[in-house]
Each structure stands twice: as structure tokens, then as C-alpha cells.
Length: 183
Image 1 (tube, rainbow, N blue to C red):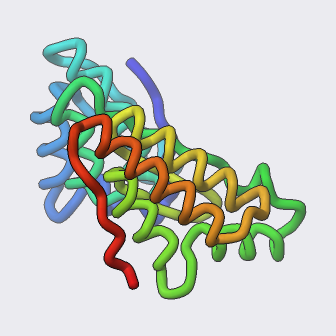
Image 2: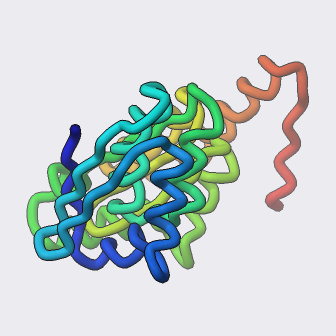
């Protein structure tokens, strides 16, 4: 049995209307979830396939950190998909700095976050004081590197170039070509 704590405002998302999302997670991940809505603690017990059950805590954590349940459940799509998060607060000096760093990760009208998703293939969420990413190991690694560059103060253009270079390398590795049509 494992315990995961999630923010109060994400409990409803985890449970879903009439418990629908909770049941879907339990069935798909072959786990039993016991949610304490008073303190946000979720007990996760494996009930079936141990490998699927190992993804249960990751799914709960991902939902707790702002991912939609459908996105979190993609962790079960294959053994390689993973969830990782960065605590932005640890990189911030104070509340103002935290807001600025979150803004850098999100970008104007969400454009930086969208570009990270487009160029890595991963799903990215900035929620509270965390940067979360779900994807294949290589996608997660590249998104994490881009986020760390932004948190360290690298110019957005430098980070976008890094992402485009990594995307081109990955497509060449897959025997495809990448054309930047962004303008």
C-alpha cells in the first residue's frame, strides 16, 4: 500500500462525477484507491497486475499536479510513459520570483508551454508551484531540460532553438525531416 497526498482542490477531479473517474483509474490501473477528502491523502493498494499497479501512484500524483485524468491515464498506454515534476518553488527566491518563473514557463498566452508540447511530444502542465510532464523518457528529459533552462534565466529564443534542435535530431533519428513553418 502506498500513500500520495494531493491538493484539496484536486480531490474532486480525482474522484470525478459520482466517483466515475476514481472507478476508471481503479479498473485501468488495477488498484483500489481510498481517498481521505479531509486531508488529501490517497491510499493506493494494488489489486491485480503489479506492473499496472505501480503506475497507480504516478496517475494520482499527476492528477494532483494539474493533469486531466485522461492525460494521467496515458501512463498506462505502454511501459515507457512516465510522469515527472519539478518544484518551481525550490528555484524561486520569493513569491514574486515564483510568479515570474511560472510566467516564463507558461509564456505569453501559454505559448511557451504549447511549444514545449509541440516540439517534445510530451504533455506539460504548470500547476501551483510545479512543472509537470508526461511522455516517453526522451520527451520528458528534453522538456525538463527546457524548463530548467527557463528557470535558470535563459532567453526564450535560446530555449526554443534548443527544443527545435532536439526535435530535428529526434526526427532524423527516426528517418524523418522536420520543417519549421512557424514563420
